Structures are given as C-alpha cells and as structure tokens.
Length: 577
Image (cartoon, rainbow, N blue to C red; front, side):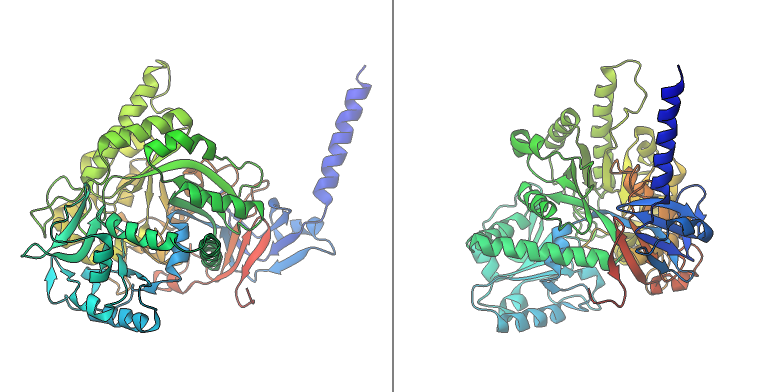
C-alpha cells in the first residue's frame, strides 16, 4: 500500500538532488561575505538565475561550478547585500545630472557666475535649472540678504532673458530671477499660498526666495513651458533621465531604490521600462498624488511585483512640513535664530487623515515627511488614531496591527516624549545618516544646544527604544553615496572631522543592517532582499574594503568593485559601462 507514495518521495528527492548539482551561473569565491543572517559570515556563494543557490565555504562551491559558470575571485574583498536606498527621488537623481550642480559653490557670487555662463549658451526664453545651493554653507553671507538668503538682483542681471529656477539643497525652497517671477505672476501684491512663503525685503518686495508651497508658483510656470514641447521630446527626456539615474545607482552599489514620491505619469514610465526589461535597479514607489486623484485612480496603481520584483507600488507619500535648513521644518517652539517663526505646516492635518483613511482601506503604506518635532508629533498622533481605529474593530487584535508598517520619512528632530512612540506604534523611522553630518553646521543655530542634543538625529535613542531605522541619502538632496552615508552613520563626523553628538552613532552592523535588511523590511521585502542566503534574490555588492573592520578614517575611500542585480553583473569597476 505504501509503494507508490514511497516512489513519489524518492523521485522528488532525486529531482531536488539534480537541481542542486546543476552548475551555477555565477560563483564568487575567496570573499569575506557579510550575509546579515546567521551565520553572519561566509567565504563564497553561488548564483543560479536570479537567486542565490548556496552560501558557504570555498570548498562547497565545487559542485556548483561547471564549464559555463563565471567565477569571480574576490581576493578577500568584502561582499554584502546590495545597498537599498530607502528614501530618494529617482527621477530627481536623473534630472540633477542634467542641471547646474550648485552643491559645491562656495558663495552666491559663484552661483551667479555659473548661471551667467549658462545664459550665454542658452536661447532667450529657455529655462535655466540648478539645484543644491545652501546659504548656511557658503564661505561668506550674500550681500544684501534677508534671513541669510540672497535677493534676486544679481541673478536677474546674470540671466535677464532667461527664467532661472534654482532649488535649495533641501528641495524645500527655490531661488528665482525676475524673468521667472514675471512668468509665474509673482509680484509685490501676490499673497503667500497656504503652507508656503514668498520671502520679502523690508519694503515688501519679493526677494526671489520661495519657501515650501510657494515654489509651486514658479514650478507651474516651468511645467507649462515643458508641456509645450512635443510629446516625443518629453518622453525621450524622461527616459534619458531614468537611464542616468540607473547608472548612478549601479555605480554606487545600489540594487534597490525606494522612490519617495512619484506621480501616476512617472509610474506609467516605470511600467513601460519594466515591460521592456529596462529597470536595471529594483524600484519600490510611493505615490504622490492628491487624495482626490488617489480616490479616482490609486487602486489601479497598487502593484506588488511578486514575479520579477522589479517594480512595486504600495505606498503613499505626504509632506507635513519643510526642511530645517530653509527654516520650513515645523517646530513645537520657535527657531533659535528666527524667533518669529516655528516653521511651516505644508499639508493640513485633515488632508493627512484623509490620506491615512485611504491607505488603511486600500492596503497602502503611509509615508509622511516629518522633520521638525511638531511635524513628527502630529504624524505620530494621526498614525496612533488610525491604529486605534483598526484595533477597535477587533478587540483581541495585538497592540500594533500586523501588516501596517507606516513610516516617518526623515524623523530628524524629535521631542523626547515622542522617541519611544516609534517602537510602541510599530512605526518605521526612515532616516538619512548623511543629513546629520551635512546639516550639523547650522543645526545648533536653528535649534540651540538643548534641543539639538535631546532630539536631533537620535539614532541611538531610537534603536535602543526598539525602533527600526531604514537608511538612505534623500538623493538629490545629498549625493547618492552609500559609503559616505555609512561613514556618517557610524562616526557622525563631517568631512572636516567634527563629530555631532557622537553618542548617537550606530554600530557598524547596525548601520549595515539599516541599509539592507531593515530597508527591505520597511518595504515588506525582507523575504527576498536584504540578506544573502539560499533562495533570496542575488542582489549584492563587492567592495574594496571591509566596512565592518576598516578604520573610521578609511571608510570613505572604499570603492564599489561590482554591483550585481538578480545574478547579473550590472557594474564592474574599470569596465566600460
């Protein structure tokens, strides 16, 4: 009676053995592999198709190595799961490559010279776009200035016939010239939009600085200009920007990118690239559309890519405040260096509650940009309100509803009372290590020492309270450089060597996990990404130095040698890409 079941079991065992003996497509040997799993370290791994076939000792790879197997001798190099950028702006990364890079400009006069040079090459009427300026990082303050920001006069002289739009490093303010203000309809009598501010001089005239929602006035004019171009040109530009973004990701060892806010139209572009097999990096996308648009079309865009894992759309992005650098972060108390302001609430709380209701009903994660301590408190309050509503429908449900994983994006400045609420509510802190060291030169000015020490970039306090931190760069706000970001996370030191409250730094393994398995968990993808073990997607990076042991001062010199996505070598240092 047992004959046929036994035969079936034997056949299944034979088939499994034959699969195991099939040669791998790629074997990596002689490496120090941080699996981010138990056991944590290995010497070698084998990849078959898009997934890992084995992880272990060098000797164990013999059965996976055949005539057609590519073998990479790592020569002791460090292998880890591919970096997961947990918060960045994918198309913004590509667009940044095609605009004026203002990050390293030492002064306002240096920027106006760059604009003047661009204007000499541009036809009249063509918009000149740049990004990355930060008034608090210039070697001398501009003259004249209002609240530390320049006025538009020199910018208008540099490009009298071209509208100019220069985005602040944070992305939460912009500087425009007279031509751009003319096209945008910005004049002395123009009222500030809700959630935004037109900075004005003592006489009430616009200076050219547009904070938060006021940027929309200029961007509407710019987008109208773009819309007049032929559709084929617009599509070609978008595809070129995506290609540039993919290239930058791969060059920096990033295998997955969590896109912090895209429109339906951008998701349509991603879908077409996926259909063509041209998503070189895995994308996980937050929708950035109004509540009305989500109600009309959002459900049709929710996508869980369980087959190829190239494109997932399962989150919604909202911004509750602005940035600390432009004094748009929403604070519980006024800015130390601008007592007349406590920042800006950029999305009404009722709008956020409407988004939360939609997300809860349709299975979306809710991801809220909150930088200031009040923005974080209000976000956590809304999250808690909806968690309680969900629990009230099931009296025996656990305290934190499973499957929610709502996120606070940035969580840069927290009140002490709100730090333990992240773990208590199961809210993920999606933070950017590099923001700490990049912002450090002006944080004390904005917050004062007491508030800065209590709640600014408090990774250690969050981790010790049980919260999950996912790491990223917020590119193009910062460079898409996970090595520099890792260095900031474990040292909290600037390029000049000054440490910003170093007691809050992460350990090496905590920082590694924040960029891999934690980021995967923040996207419901930990079963497929974030660690290196049999059956998981073969997304990994080979580095020139061991991030877990290299001295602090040598971390930033680490280079990406290989980036592998789905078992395919997508970047190899020194090879023609």
